[in-house]
Every structure is written in structure tokens, then in C-alpha cells.
Image (cartoon, rainbow, N blue to C red; front, top):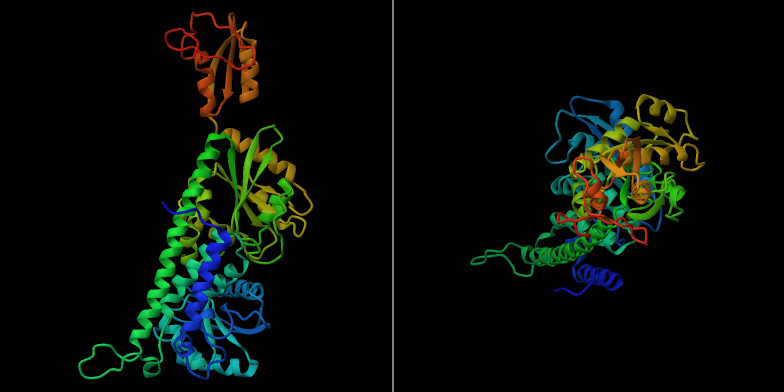
Amino acid sequence: MTDPIEPDEQMTGYRDEFDDFVDDTPHELLDGIDQESHRGAFGDFGGESSAFIERTFRERIIAVGVSFPPHDDEARDASLDELALLVDTAGADVVGRVVQRRDHPDPATYVGKGKVEEIRQLAVATDCDTVVFDDELSPAQQYNLEKLLGRTAIDRTALILDIFAQNAHSQEGKAQVQLALFKYRLPRLRGKGATMSQQAGGVGTRRGPGETQLELDRRRITRLIHKLEADLVQIARHRDTQRKSRRRSTLRHVVIVGYTNAGKSTLLNRLTEAGVLVEDRLFATLDATTRRLQLPGGEAVLLTDTVGFVKKLPHQLVQAFASTLDVVNDGDLLVHVVDGSGPDPEGQMQAVRQVVADIGGQAVPELLVFNKADRSDEARRLADAHPGSVAISAVTGDGVEELLLRIGDRLRSLVPAVQMFVPYQRGDVLAALHRSGEVMTETAEDDGVRVSVRLEASEVGRFDEFLSDAPLSAAPVEASTDGAVPTVAVDGSPR
């Protein structure tokens, strides 16, 4: 059995082995681009930075967006606006935009050679450092673009991975991001021909120039990937143990989901004083945080904040964060936080629901919450347009009390009502029903009180002798001195 993972030592081991890999590998192989390239692509695999976007200065970025049939220029521009926010979160500035309409992507350069030349001229004029494409590029397209542009070319996936790598702090978060980065970079390793050859080509040899070194580097990264996957499986086991403990606690689980920067962490802090980092930027927090919350009705629930979603969320991240996102499937209620002051709330809602469906959480009930009502009246208009939703301001606290009442009502509605008949002499049982569940109706009859009550499945067993569809036991039962409700076995003996 594998020893438990020590967070700092484990992640330091990954970094040390990865640093050794970079140090031992000649830069010509890792760069894999023309010598005129501005910096060298793929972060740790080229240049001096360990990230896709340089952190030692504010890079100048050109954003490229392409629309395909059916063309929607507004959606394309909105996506580029979000890409600019992602660039700003990564610590760079957008200095130019290039847009294009195409029937299909160009296999070699995604945008075609003519548009590449236009981008190159703009890059020279603006002295940009990197060109970021709003859609995912294949390794071949990325390679060709860098040769033609003479500078780094990355896609939206690489940009999001870079931000996640910057903001992950927990052991699990770092491991998940590192795994996604390795999987992204593995097919993008390439050589520079004879300059990297360890075994010369020629008669009687089957290996071409540079192939030996490439195979060695790929094996080393593959080994790191396998190590990360194995340790994440172990972490997932620990999470399963925690989930089992939560299920035994009988506490309901409420999960906050939503688009990035919608105000999820602010809401968690408002409700539980969790002290989670809050910043007005995308993906400020990545690590899930769980706190206990007391609802107005007196019942306690577990409230979990999750990583924010985004349109075109990289598939590598969805896979890597599978164990973290599983908390959505285990939730009893999803509190879907929407930025009511944002440019496209409906589109953000659709993106979040798509990711939730991809991870199998579409069956979990959802409560829509339109946040940032202090910034715009649009939040209240959206709440009126979606029956059952609520408009709030997590910053000022406006509407939060109504939200708590809605959460309590929705959770109670998930519990089925059972019918019970309690004799008049068993007032202790009636009091216990009020403590353990929600008594909906009480009807007085000749011999006792008929009660309709919502009880958790784990609580019903305590009162099974009083279920109205089962006859009352004829055996005398005395109330226990500690206030617990006794039950009677089939043979009439106390359990």
C-alpha cells in the first residue's frame, strides 16, 4: 500500500524532477521554433519562464478570433472580450485584435497564410510578445504559426492552464494543474533535426536525426504523468472517505457553482465568514472550500465553493479536476450564482450547465441566484424572468436572507413526507418529531395525533413503529430517561 502523500514534499518532488528535465534538455529541442522567435514557446519547455505568459514584465498580446458558420460576430466579439480578461488575469495586456470569418479552419495555420501575414505585420507594428488564439490549436498549427510569426503563439487552452497554474495552492489543485499541463505539452515536444541527434542517421540505422532525444524526453514526461495520475487516484480515495463521513453525518450538502468571477467566494464569505480570497478577476480561487452553515429554520448544512467555469473550458482541465468536480454530483442542491451585471448572463448560465452535465451533475436540483444587484438592475430583472430564482448582492448582503430561506425551502422539499400516528400518551415522540424533521400537519383523532412530517431517511427508522401504515405495537413502551425515542422490534421486545 502506498504511503500517504506529504503535500509539500510530493509537489517539490514533481518540480525538482521537472526542473531537472528542463535543465538536461538542450534548448533547441525545447524551443522547437525558428531562431527568430521572440521568446520560445511552451513555458517550461522554452524561454526563461516557467509559464506560457511571462511574469517578469507585462507582455504585449495580440488576440485572434475566428468565426465559423453560422457566423455570429457578436458572440465572437464577446468571446474576445473574455479572452482579454483572461490575458489581464495572466498578467499581460492586449494591444491588438484580429478577427476573421472562415468556412472551416485551415489545417496548417488555422487562419490561412494571408491572415498570418496580416497578424505578423500587426505584431511588428505593436511590438507584441505573444499571439493568443481564442480557439484550440493543434500542435502542427502552433508550430507553423510560430515559424511564420517569429514569436510565441498559444491558444485559449494554454492561457487558461497558465492561469490555473498561477492560482492553484492546495496539494490536489497543484497536482491536477500539473497533470493537465504535462498532457498539453507532451504532443508539442519537437526537435531541431541533426543538432539534437544522439545517433546519426545513415545506412543500417532506422532512427532519424533527433529521434532518440525526443523519445527520451517523451518517456520522462510520460513517467511524470503516470506518477501524478497515481497520486491523484490516492487523493480521490481520501475524498471518497470524506464523502462517506459527510453522508453519515446526515447533513445536507449545498454546492455553489457558477461562472468564474460571478461572486461565489464572496457569497461563501458572506454566509459563513470563510475568509476565502476574493478578487475582481477571473479564477482568483481554484480550491474547493467547505464550511458549515446554519439556516434560518435551525437546520445545519455543508456549503462548498467550487472552481469557476468558463466557456471553452479545456478538456484537460475537466479531466484533471474530475475528483474536485465530483462534489457537484454529491450535492443535494446546486446554488448556481450568475453575474447579473455581466455582458451575457444567459450564455454564462448555459456554459455552466454544460460543464455540470459533462461531469454528470445534471440531475442535482438547481437554485438560480443572480448576484451583483448593487451594480445593475439587470439582476432583479433576470430574477423576475426566472421563477424561483433570487437576486442578491453578496457584497452588501441585500437579498441574502431571502436566499437562505429559499435554500431551506428547497432542501426541505427534497425530503419526502411520511404519515405517522402518535398516541396522546407519547408526547415525547411528538416532541422528537418536531426536533428531527419538519412537521407539516397535525390532526387530532380519538386516540392520538395523525402527523405528516418530513424526515430524512436515516431518521425514519427511529419512528417506524408509529408509521400510520403499520399497526401500533401492543407491547408497553416506556420513554427513556435520556429523551431518546425507543423503537419496538417485531416480537414486541424493546430494541
